[in-house]
Image (cartoon, rainbow, N blue to C red; front, side, top):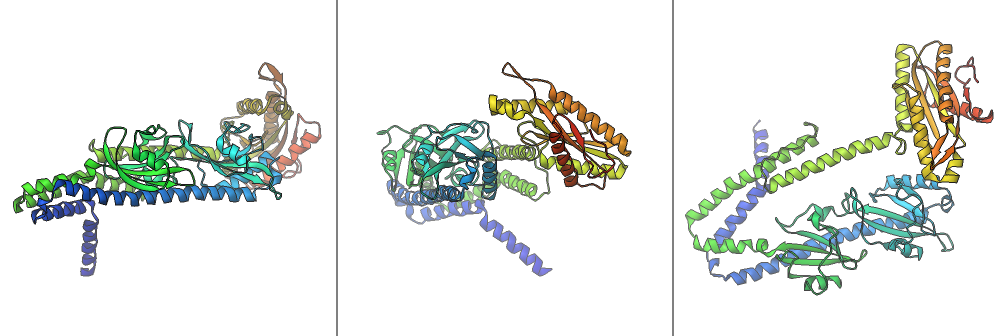
Length: 555
């Protein structure tokens, strides 16, 4: 028991020694003692010069670390892109679907590019991308600097540009894809949002003091690529000749000095180049904040008494405890949410100060993370084009339907649909018209089934319908399933109006029936085989599988 109490006391002592409030108190007390024992006679200008040297050294160390970190991350992405280009199967360049699958596999293994990858042909036209975006598919990027460079055989990092209002600025890079003879066959490009986790985290999450921070600048484009202050991102930098330190940093290398920023605030800044991207990083802090201890030292000279030192310590103890209490409470609240002790919910904002602003920013980040998680959950279970359940959610729905069938002694029907004549729309009108047709057909199919049934798109022009809770009698179940199949054939056969033209497509349907003892794969396989049988018998019809039920009739 005594050992346990001793350990608890040691842990509490460690928490006190690690506390920021404790360190601030010790820092203030140290300054008071130094000034009280004779350092008061130093001139303020001397202290200022001394602190400038110290802060400049610290700034150079900080900016050097940040620059190396970003250089490593940029180089890592470029090397990954080169390795992917080296192993990209050239025979997939003419097979967009298989190429997209290849991109997906490698993207999921090493997701360094938050905005995905794409492969463009030698004309700069995108032939496959992942994640698949309508704004990229089939788009020609030959005017982009990084694509032009890659087509010339040079791996290149393009200028930072705004991708969209939601994504924000994006870093683009591309490398050539060559065959064994060295001929360029395609271009592989990757995209990373500057706000994405894993690129500029260090500078975005690490302010210097209260008003200082980091900048990443592209001197060629004269813009701020990233900054601790988000409002500066993508804004123009000072024109040449306005800020001498900025002009010096634009030429490369590293260094530090005092300068005046665009807001007229004097600050100490240090810079270091990021050679792979042609950028440079800046660490800056206002001189008013950096030299705050000078003013304190002058006050301590006047108040060089033991009483004032004791009073100062008391004020620091009480004041910092009060100031940091909301921060400690917010940290404890966040920790409990992380450990699952509390549900994810916004943390109350106690005061409208820096701590309150930090809490509010955390709440916004939490809200965004929850929203993104919900969107990712929906994307993982639904077809992005039609909004119908995808293959993953289909398997889950079938599992639920078979569980009910086993429990209630009922049956279920699985209809495997493949459109007839759909390729003509894509060939004549393009993929955009084909997508419009698929969305329209998805709505039609959804209109002929019950709310409890499932209509899913599993790829291309293939759909699967699951009709659950059918009667146990096989004849009655077949009658219900065939009735739905006939309705599907009817609604699909209705002409589709696309850009003033009328197009007619059909559908071939394979049907399988199961109960609680069936399996998802066996039902889908049987329905798929019957669908191909319907194709062979003239299309525009349905065939009932005899694989699971030998007595089943078919059309």
